[in-house]
Amino acid sequence: METRQSLFYGAVILTILFWGTAYTLIGYSIEYVSPAWLVAVRTTIAAITMTVYALLRGHRFPSLRDPVWRWYGFMGFIGLTLPFYLNARGQVHVESGLTAVLAGVMPLITIVLAHFFVKGEHLSWRKAIGFFIGFAGIVLLFLPMPLKWDLIETWRSQGLILLSAVCYASTTIIAKRAPETSASIGAAMMLLASAIMSSGWAMSTGIPETLPPNSAIVALVLLALGGTGMAQILYLRIIKIKGPSFIAKMVYLVPVFSIIAGIVFLDEPFSWRSISALGIIFIGLYISQIRKKKT
Image (cartoon, rainbow, N blue to C red; front, side, top):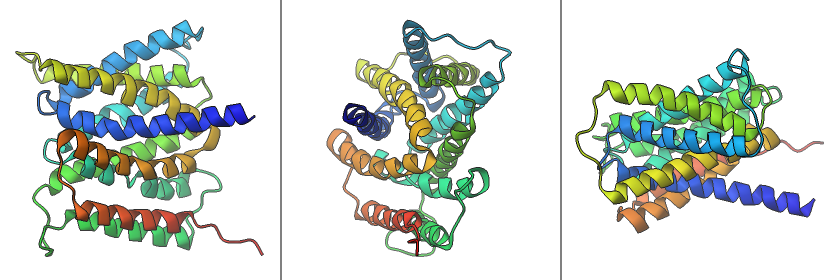
């Protein structure tokens, strides 16, 4: 039992590290690769790797007529292709640390969606207060410095990243309701569907005339194998065991790690506003997770 629990929490820590460094790797790669091609390469490498991994483990894909393909194909679009593209477009103008903070509102959105779509996850007044406090943290990120009631110049890019958080939250709810299947097969199906869609999307934008530098290629490969492939297997496994609420708690730590990684590896400036907004969001999340004591 202790060994199984240790493995579970080891998987949780590894997933947080994969998600946190993903924003840093995107922040570097996007300087040399267009958003559409970044998503296509990222998902294609991950799809091939995860398919081989699943087959080597003895798993078999369901028939193409099986409804499970529709579930995981849709999750591939809403949880991979679309948010990956929105994040990449947003990070053209937004730092990786700030991107992680914006994407970190996913738990708040999950709380609202779970009220409507997950049995037993009703929206209490505590959750509602927590949501609005967390939303205040997001508003802080959209205001320019010095503070005034105008939108910050990069508000469109930040908005794209917020939309990606909605996509991730929706996927968390859908994954909990999806038909039961092994995590490796589920991840492979999502990635295959995403790779097909994103590759077609990228091809429509034209073929790049030059290759990116070797460092960017290495960053893309690391992003594909870790933050996309292995993270997806671990994510599906964890959500089946613990559910959407536990995933929401995991996301608490992702922005912290991503901010540190951005400062260390990308020389991004330390921002008290990002830290303040993150603190406000954390307070909102904490309040939303308080459970009423039984009397």
